[in-house]
Amino acid sequence: MPTLNWIGKDKVVNHHLDVPFRTLEKQYTFASEGQDDGGNMIIHGDNLDALKALLPKYEGRVKCIYIDPPYDTRSEE
Image 1: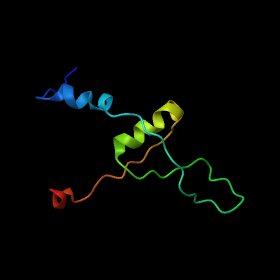
Image 2: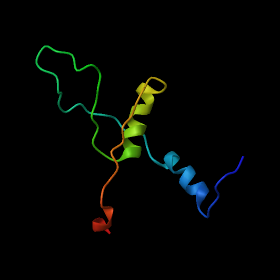
Image 3: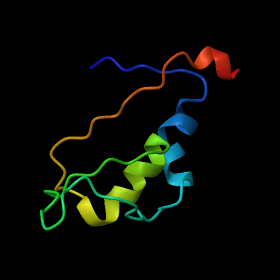
């Protein structure tokens, strides 16, 4: 099977090991009073930090994660 190799690949592939686990803090809900929010969450933050925060509690239980990509990042250079 063909594979992609590039200089620095090992560092990129193992970068997640350097990022510490985080905890999620519930700040608000979208449910009305007395209603269940259905367990859905919106998480704002760095993608890797958010995924690492979900891992301890939700490993193997998450059906879908939508990651909204950054747009027009050239302005941040």
